[in-house]
Image (cartoon, rainbow, N blue to C red; front, side):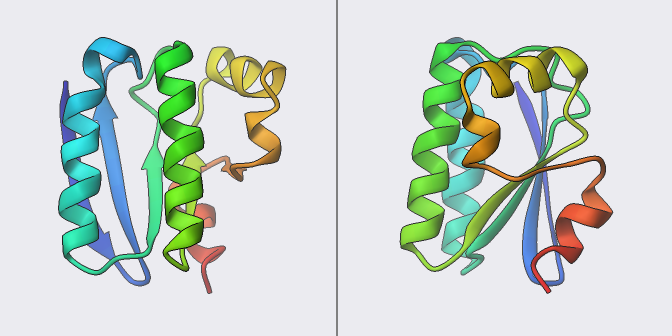
Length: 111
């Protein structure tokens, strides 16, 4: 899976191109590690190209949210598909990780 990374303002933005499944997580983990090395404590995952999330992806998001919070930052999700929104709601992960309609609003939430 390819992951586009960019830093803008107070956050790093990751745009994965594929499902957040156990098989695809290494690419996004590497991007998160690289972002952390740059000193960014706030992260937005732009999910516009993420069609689905499996249990491994949910666990990854939960763990990442905890790590970000422990580092003094936070995680936001943006452009989440209806299917993924349902998955996040069913698992109540949307109660832990803020979900925004677009990356602009997600980014502004850090201000």
